[in-house]
Amino acid sequence: MRVLVTGTAGFIGFHVAKKLVAAGHEVIGIDGMTAYYDVALKRRRHAILLQSPGFSAHELMLEDEAALGAVYEAAKPDMVIHLAAQAGVRYSLANPRAYVETNLVGTFNLMECVRRAPPRHFLIASTSSVYGGNTKMPFVESDPSDHPLTLYAASKKATEVMAHSYAHLWDIPTTAFRFFTVYGPWGRPDMALFKFTKGIVEGTPIDIYNNGDMARDFTYIDDLAQAIVLLAEAIPQDPRAFPEDAAELGLSPLAPYRVVNIGNGAPVRLLDFIEAIEQAIGRPAIRNYMPMQPGDVPATFADTSLLERITGFRPATPVTVGVQRFVAWYRDYFNL
Image 1: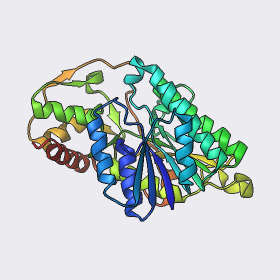
Image 2: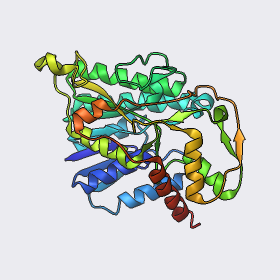
Image 3: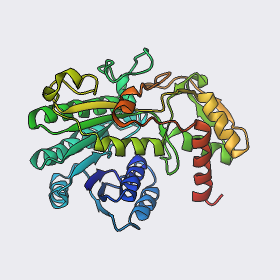
């Protein structure tokens, strides 16, 4: 198939594109190469993908409606996987406009392309942050998600709702997936694992929020990418065709649309995560305990039964294994 993937120079987009190309698909990548973090890391990711004849890349911002429309029209994709976004919970406190421009306007522009020339399946990335301050665990896709704690979460919830309206109005099969704390090789420098590893390797203090009293459903990147590739083949059907099965398959009652959690289904204490990094590096961290940050939540925990029911796959890479692989990549990337 011809698959258009946005954000292919990003952490998740890079890994998803690699899996798609390895499976024999033609991937047309789009990335804006924004300076949110080290652009050299993004270009290294793209350079690896460009070694394959099955991958081509376009550098543009999704906010550029004309440029995006030209690439989309030429690509004529069978599937679209939308992973480009302004990410980061804390950054949304400092630069909220970036989330409106990229996550809302950029996504709208892509959805208009999809409306004009619908693919077989439109897949769009969301986040566990949409569950906001929910305390019922694990998080199930049908749980309330109307009380986001940050503009980042609000922007991703908005894209889910926008996509549902287009799926209903234009009969576009659509899947939105909610990520849970993704980590692994080629990860983003603003994420906890990268920052913790950098601090421990360099012998500088690491900031541990809420005094370490937190837990996250850490999801290894290979598991996440595999889940997305499998979900791409699980195309939502019109729920009116089999209303008795719609709820079981996670379908909206009004559109060929569903939301699916992608997580490990096993939350890990933040302090245990840090200990795994210390063991992989072979030295202790200098710990700087800090209070909870605005917009943060004490725990996340995904119910992944819908993902398993639809695809037969369940992420299961242990944190100790995933952290060791990241540390090995980090040492290799920085020649340590």
